[in-house]
Amino acid sequence: MAIETSCDETAAAVVADGRRALSSAVYSQIEEHRLYGGVVPEIASRRHTEQIIPVVRAALEEAHTTLAEIDAVAVTYAPGLIGALLVGVSFAKGLCLQAGKPLVPVHHIRGHVAANYLAHPELEPPFLCLVASGGHSHIVEVADYTGYRTIGKTRDDAAGEAFDKVARVLGMGYPGGAELDRAGREGDPRRYSLPRPKVTGSPYDFSFSGLKTAVVNLAHNAAQKGESLHTADLAASFGATVAELLATRFLAAARDLGCRTLACAGGVCANSRLRAALEEAAAENGCQLYLPPLSLCGDNAAMIGAQAYHEYRAGHLAGMDLNGYASLDIDRNWEVGDYL
Ligand code: KG4
Ligand code: ZN
Image 1 (spheres, rainbow, N blue to C red):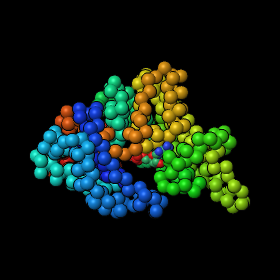
Image 2 (image 1 turned 60 degrees about the vertical axis):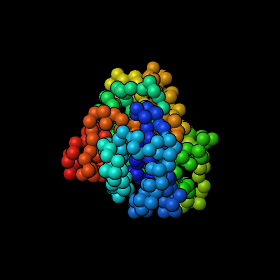
Image 3 (image 1 turned 120 degrees about the horizontal axis):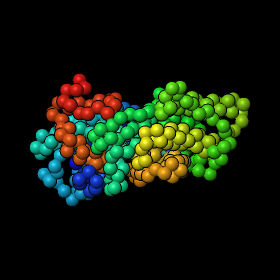
Image 4 (image 1 turned 135 degrees about the horizontal axis):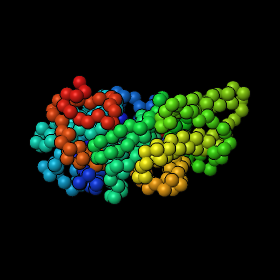
């Protein structure tokens, strides 16, 4: 049984052998946060508190199982909104106490990577993974199921953050990544020439804030002059630029490391231009690319259960003093008291 409450989705799932999701229940709070143009942490914590019991019940029912039959309870303990994480962590402890089950702490981004194990039975480490979500843009070497090395990362905004900000400036709702993607489908990706920021001396790092600001400035200048922008073309140009930056640096890292097995993880992996750019670049370089299905790109608890299987087997269990952590590198392995 896996529980995920790191942001604005209250989620629970039952996963067998780290590869099969027997159920996956998600309560999305997004409609409420949309009113404020972003996730309001206190509201997120409160909704998790209200929804966690119905969501866990739904996951058990959908899997036709009971808590007694579950081997272990897994929970996302980092990174994320601290108040939101603590709801899941505390609830998972309660379940463990009540049912006498071990507690497995799972890193949220490890979960995103593990979404691929649910979709691709043949995928096994080692592989190189591009992680692109609302809070992260990383290139990670997955050495084994619980061993990671960060090869590159963003120096400022995450790709999803940049998508959401640009979408907002173009008058779209929150989170605007998916809407911006749709708006740009028919647009001309060459209409607007946008900057492609590099990080000097770090060929695998990203920087999206200059690109984001360039689009924001375009929009503001146009508004000041009373001109209108071509939304579809601007959305297409921005999407194509982000996709190109992510795909070229990811493939450069793969080439330099001699890694031919690639995967992608996180909400931004649902982006149509990024998926196409990765497919094309992987094919050109003779690499095997694994993309999670759209249903597993965003936050869910099935991916947490998929990773929990390997953490459990590696003996990464937590005691009843488990805490939540707002930020934590993916390559830190769980040890009791390590993060206090
Ligand atoms: O992985 P995720 O669900 O949550 C985090 O752990 O952050 O990622 C959410 C992010 C948001 O910024 C959202 O706008 C973005 O993923 N996103 C997309 C698309 N679908 C979701 N960005 C671009 N294109 C999409 N199709
Ligand atoms: Zn996530």
